[in-house]
Length: 113
Length: 116
Image (cartoon, rainbow over all chains, first blue to last red; front, side, top):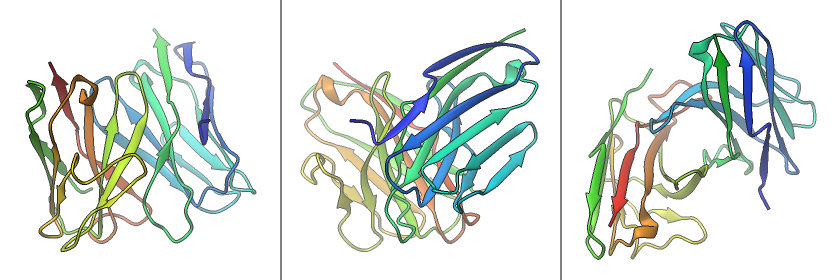
């Protein structure tokens, strides 16, 4: 079974709409990373959350980690075609900042102009 | 932000051969990792590349198949040995720690490998 579940698997939204991607685990997440990947390319680092209840924002993207540190959400406000891509959550489920990440299956986002 | 480069960016190889992938970081880093992304799948950690000592492999990955070197704090190589079509994947290296902003793990652009 997948240790890190992402939902939805894919998403098509109209430009200007808001959207949310979720990442859930049954284990404590000691570090939760959000990345964006364009097809066939490397991962672009977006944000990292570590503390329960933490929230970070960058431009129109906001990420939150719940108090129990088992669920994170990524919210995009007023989506644009440039937001299209695959969003991946990765997490360190080992205490001690090992840097060894497991990843969710990814969410493919399409933004229609 | 740190820049991570990988060589080659892509390759097509015959089964039974080996390919060595290089990963270069433009600053000294504490941790370097190698991941595999099989077609249509997410990333799976292969191993942690340890500077000056043997790599630490995750379950399902062995040194004979994926030998790794890390001679210094900025460079690592991953060899995919005795390749089969099942090894066709994107291989990515990542780096974290000293030299990279705290609470960040950066990835290289990946090496796309096709084994015939």
